[in-house]
Image (cartoon, rainbow, N blue to C red):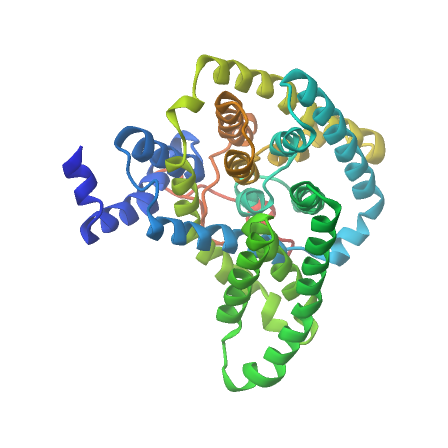
Length: 408
């Protein structure tokens, strides 16, 4: 054991880790295991089995780049015009999400004897789709262009709601704290357009192709700023992505297809380190028989409820056939990133029983597998857009309608 730990503390050890995280997850995609789940499992094996990398600052830094890039990509993919075209149905969708969140919070508070704030966080962990993960996976699900647009719109709208709730919950210990944090976040958002304008006028003309580095720098800085506000890295990165998208009229390269491609490739390189790092943070005491029973209960209650609420709403609002509505609802099931983030917050800030955290991990790992198995398609991998997902010895044939996660 000591020899293994000593080896992975050396440069060759990090090279082995890098090769393992970038290659091994793609080798097992043929068995419908998402690359994120494989990376997470490798982290769990390293942490629980060999006590490796749990406090490793290098892995932590690389994982931060991964989560920041993923939420920056999600923010850049927010198309206000696209959301506006679906306003009526999306508002109805969000009203249903709020009602489900309220009911789940009350039920969890009574069932698990939780205070209100941790109950809300657990409800968010159960109900919030992981937008960045879903957007990156869409092209592998064989959906039509219209179905992909609906999945994107619903995932983005739901995550915007969830981020708002997360911010309020984490800052609601006192009204002064909430007010100060809100003012700080508003100031951050208000500052971004000025920074983007300065970059467009004073920097970009003299530093060609520097938009990528600028976006990443701003995402990392704002991510750390919101982390200091107590709302984790993802809020700041997401806000920068949204601001970059809205600024595309002044600086078209900021939200171009090439930029989205570059950010997604960057995220595809670093995001395995986030899942690996999340796996190393697991603790043996979190996985007990009680955790398994509760995790199965979460799956049996939350997944059918989420699919049914989306499918039935679409059946009533749009007159779709139930089978078509389920095809839109199923890709929205993965909660992996958001649940892991909330498990980390709950572990740091609230003294929840360890078996509840273990149950959330079991729940999110299994529900992330749902789309691939339910739709009978290969598992999603974090591949660059336009490249076929590696699912076996030969790339799968992909129809033009299913070959891109963004509309033509």
